[in-house]
Length: 81
Image (cartoon, rainbow, N blue to C red; front, side):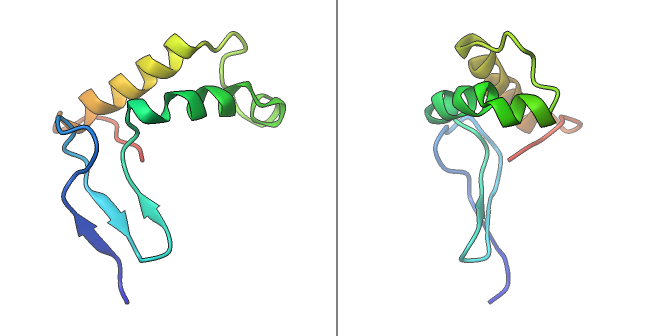
């Protein structure tokens, strides 16, 4: 079975498609992801192998999700899943 694309889910203001091959699903981040994003950014290995800011806060995670939401609504926005 090939990949499929469905309408956005979660944050209704997002225009990001949901992509899936039935095993892996890619979707835009939502407010429900903020705590997991914060946890990942505070993880010692994430800090060791990425450029995440050392003083990353919950507000930084909220801002990251908001920037992504805005980007999906712009024709030239930098998009991520």
